[in-house]
Length: 213
Image (cartoon, rainbow, N blue to C red; front, side, top):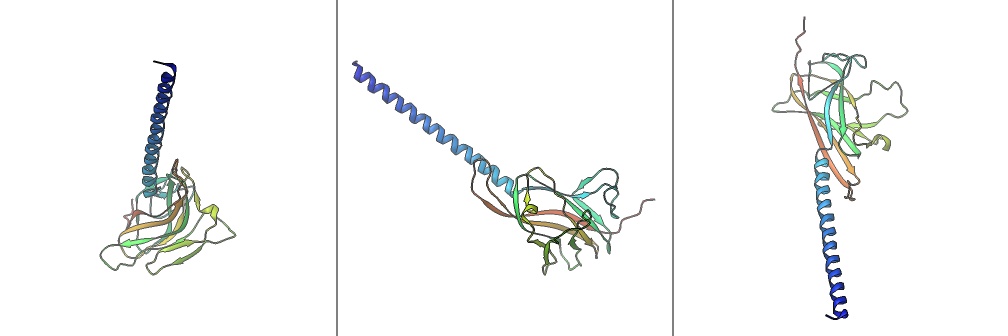
């Protein structure tokens, strides 16, 4: 075989190898992007770990639950009817997001019971220069709007504790709903911005609490 033919075969082999490597790189990028996109969708479908928070008795005294020196996370509260108190949410983002409008309220099944009412309230702030804008819709949901951007950027892994004054009326089982309009500017190899409306649900039981002797 002459040197020219050998050189041609060498270049052909290099070109083929380069092509195989390029296809491998493209395939891996596709696989990584597909994996990241799936993770992105899963995180956006459930971006928050959410519970009710029972604060320690040193931080804030409540009337509807037993307290000790430690905070407690629960998914169900029992509060007596015709009671005014404060409820706390514990929210930990699984992905960093920017919040838009957010609203909170109660649903009840099967009848026309008078639902609990809530109002945004932070017992740990003595004074603030700006009170959040809000409105209450026909269904009794409390909407927080127009919050400063620094209060709307929620970081992955940090804990946020919004709190509300609550007023209960009729006994019954209620579903507390925390609804968030949010956006996320991407995740790993995914650079596109996504918007989502998500609902977190917890249980509230309004009933008389037996006093413990």
